[in-house]
Image 1 (cartoon, rainbow over the protein chains, first blue to last red):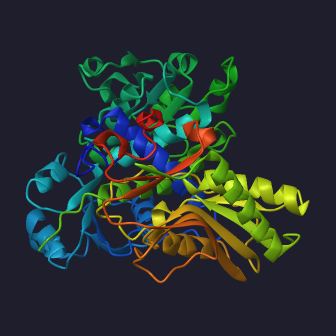
Image 2: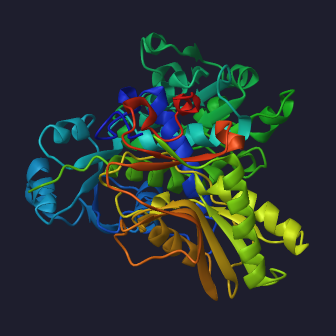
Length: 310
Length: 193
């Protein structure tokens, strides 16, 4: 069964069957990744361009590895050092890449909505690898997949998203994804970092991190996105760490073991302390491992939708 | 619809195939059995069970192989949900008996050989199929052990039903499948036509 969409732009456009299908396929790819030969020849006739207009380590490496494990040819493009700095437009850049016979584009862009704009103008399938403060669908999928691996079905499970909700695309995609899978979602952080009217998405709002931790089964701690905060939203990082950071004492004071997640990169000692990030409650490195399998599944399932060019 | 093998006949055929395997491989010391997902597994389980009984060796290595990611028609198939691969032993230097229910174009077996070789370098690979649809091969692949040979045309389809999955043991030749039964593993198939 193919996905209901041609592109993976956001979780918002996916239905529950799509998400389940991606998870089922990822299970099999995870198995492939544990073999001595961690590679299948499925997409040996496919070329994929990773077009990154914004910095990335994990996501780009993860996509590149996923593509290579599927046997696809990969070209990488990053905006710094390219003709974008000479003033080339987004469509021109991508069309030039597509003229080299590329079948799929994985794209990250600092402007929210950029992949939707591009989807209206080009024929190739697009995978959104993060657009501005909007969505980061593969991250949400791998987060939910990792939670499921740890907790079983997410129906009725309580997930807290902590920290910079306002600037985080991971938060929005997580909310869509977890809601669709039937989990209860809470966002928690300083009032200045929580968007107004976010309750409309069906989430609880809490301003006390300790209370949020007491409520939840899983805490997904998000990064403080200093690069997107153009005005002061809290006084100092030290103060933020003091009032909103997650530390070991806080975790130990809870009467239960909760699962700790973080999409990376970690600001150690700000939103999360090292003793939490490296504790055995943390599944941060499992997230990274699952990321490759999830991205293989997404690329594999989208590649069935190729239109034959005569 | 025409019955090619009924339950009694099918079970006699399985006995023969198992005996042929034991005849060639005796104690199965360096021989392993691998069934191809999804439909070949019912056959391979039966064969493995019979072979264990006949040869007296209870520890024959047995695995199942999914070939979805090795197919050559990724872009025009319907993206089937992959099944699990489970090969918990090394195939390096072993004789591998690949098992599938129906041999038709040979493309599945080609993919299976590719998939298998990613697990190591077997000394030899043999192919066992229950039904051989002759004269419809698209690749030069022939079975080493064959239960039943049948001449078919394109619009016909061979269906194998298994007691443990479909509630009966039977091999039938269908002229044209009704739309609802064309989907693999659809529950509707269990109904008597």
